[in-house]
Image 1 (cartoon, rainbow, N blue to C red):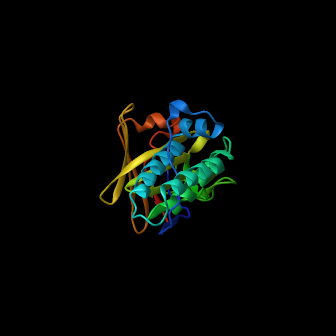
Image 2: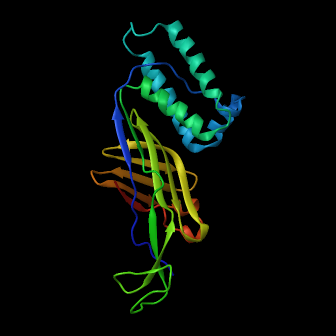
Length: 235
């Protein structure tokens, strides 16, 4: 038996205003480079590419004078060449996309809670006095042990859409992992997976992030991490 007691971590939340440079999305059926295959294979990278395509269309509609059509086309070639030097390196590709989106988008939202979390789990029945070495006595009279892990979330949003990645490292090596593209609804973002009937609501408040799964989101969790996608992460 185990129970999550508390979670904590450091979050970075930034917004910005940026200049404009070209980027564009592509057809995954025509993917030919290791970078393009990685983008098509991973949900977060694919979502970032979709955001890039939308940002490019907005850039094309910008008032004349900041860049000619030929300059846009050349800038596209240069950015793709730079992106493709990443090969299949996930973090390198992600950095290429987020950096470029900051440059071509009028505004953006970026956050990353990192991975410095701790959790405590129940260990055995209520006791009195001291716990065995390596555990602590909690307020409710049970011995608890710390393990590295807990939840993290990162996201990048432009134009009402967010590319996100949620990960929960639970006990006994079991985890939850879900990534994709969420759409803004009011002050929240919602992700829908029609294949599994999973919906994930992401809310950002002045104090932290709230993640609310509905439907069959446990399909993205190991057996001992069931329910791990439902989290509140304080700043």
